[in-house]
Image (cartoon, rainbow, N blue to C red):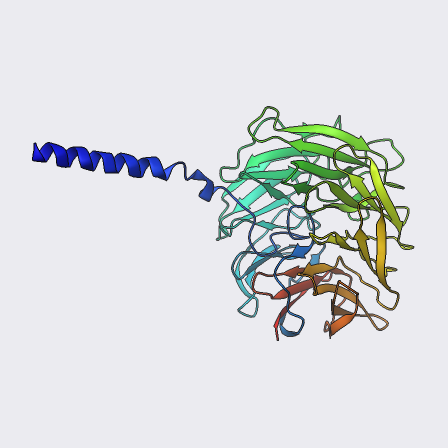
Length: 428
């Protein structure tokens, strides 16, 4: 009787323990890295980091990719960075260590032509990057984890919870991959009819200047709160691009549906859209020199604000609705508050020419690369609350045009230029 009681008690304890465990699959599902996982930061393209940024920096290292860059630097959850370059020979995809003077961890060569697409890090340091005709994932080493064919050149990918990788190619093919296994969930969605699946490089030359032969010239934005994906699309034989809204429904069939199209943005959208913290609003540059706020439920306009210049990079948006307008050769530094039914300009700096999207780090620190003198460039540190300059750091031997500013989880800041020079800053 005593032995039987002990066995029954042990069995009850084991059963209770197993019942308390539940399903633990979620911990292995891919999530974005906690650094700056891809160009423009999170999947909303917000270019915002919640941790307070360093207002004083020191230039820790510079390094060249020995080629050209057209997309920002991706930063992992630890000390890795990734750049996707266009090089005449040798490696083009490179992974370096930000806290070790940019020591190279590994590199490999991709099919060239996709340098406008940023790599993406997940929280396990796996890397996702496109090349014409394929989407590829690498583990923390250079050996390929999985590779799958696509039609066109993937724009910057995004991770959608739970564990889906959203890939939209420049020819308008939309796919959802299981990020872990590399298999497609459901059927691809084709935004453009009659695309030749054997010609994945058609129209690529039109993508960087965002012209008509490149149907999807910029990466989409996704908000988990609403399940909405917003992207720009230039359909064949039309005068201007439009906005498209897709709905993400995990566990349903189909998992992605086309919800709406909108021609509300004056002249058509330019550069990637940016979504608000609650996913209800998309902020989009118009080719009419306005910043537009679009309702993501149906694509209708909420408001627009004249910028008096053509913003060629996306705005950045804080969770409180503070927008810093995008950059470009004739840009001004402008802060705009989303007040629901209107956008209010709260400050303007006519003496600063931001050449990149401004990357915000908390409420009082933001970074942008700005024009410095006649031909120079400098990393500008400013307060996004009022636009005042906090610090200014010239970029030695900077040439070409800057491709963005990335903020690490350790408050390091990395920026780069189209001529392939990368600059690593650490808190002073």
